[in-house]
Amino acid sequence: MLNTRRLSLLRDLVRTGTIAGAAQLAGCTPSAVSQQLSALEQEMGIALLERSARSVRLTEAGRVLVEHAHRVFVELEAAEAAVRAVSGLRGGRVRVAAFNSVATGLIVPTLMAFRQRYKDVSMTFTEAEPETSMPAVANGDLDLAVTHEYGRLPKPDLQGLRQVLLHRDRLLLAVPPHLQRAGQTTANLRDYADATWLSSLPGSGFQAATELICRAEGFEPNIAFRSDQYDLLMLLVAADFGVALIPALAAAPRQGVTYLEVTQPTGLTHDIHITTREADTSPAVEALSSLLVQRGITG
Image 1 (cartoon, helix red, strand yellow):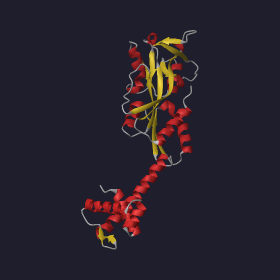
Image 2 (spheres, helix red, strand yellow):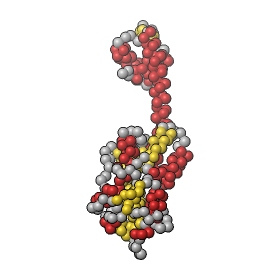
Image 3 (cartoon, helix red, strand yellow):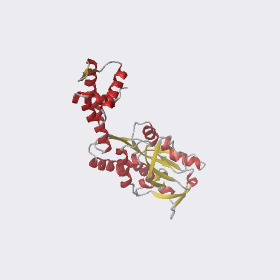
Image 4 (tube, one colour):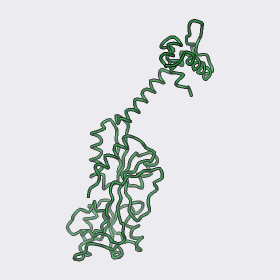
């Protein structure tokens, strides 16, 4: 590959018309310029300059090379400007994903705030669960994902990824009217082994929290109703169809539903993270991460 430093000296020679002029522009000695131009000719394998005692001028090969060099430096200058724009958040992009239940309350307001501050950074958003979004971040198809995982369950593969904890939520047991007991505020999941359960879709991956948690407690839950919408799950609980594990953030008051603190198993949490690539130093990703942390999650 051609040495851009030598190409620059050749271009300076054309601008000034002399070796001494090129040396002055480059801030070096005429001897150094001559050595570098000779090295460029050796690199190309053809004479680029016609030298005489009083002057130096381009050969046809030299003229062609300078024409291309002009285009090369225009592109290099454009590349430098684009990189500086990205570093100053005056350009670039950020590709974001998040799971459904935080998209409305957290992601949309944060993306709006980001757009107001950094109008020239393009954004894309995809609703996705962690089993989809985390591999997409790892392989470069996404830049940032808001993901979740559950305490006491196996941790996802974080090789090449970096996580920042946004919120640690409690998991509550939503109990329908026919299973409610006066004054009850806590629950042992094993006591509900024979109950009908409601859970999210699908029955695998991170969404299988109900199945995995119950199995860890020694029983297989009878899941008869499934939905990814917590409002619908709570409507079904209120209608006396069964029990459901619900993050506290989603546990809105509803007539007919009682929310119980789970005391067994202990450490039953729903952890929400910002997930990015470990090696990614994009200013846009850092700025969006900072906004997400500032806005936080309440509940």
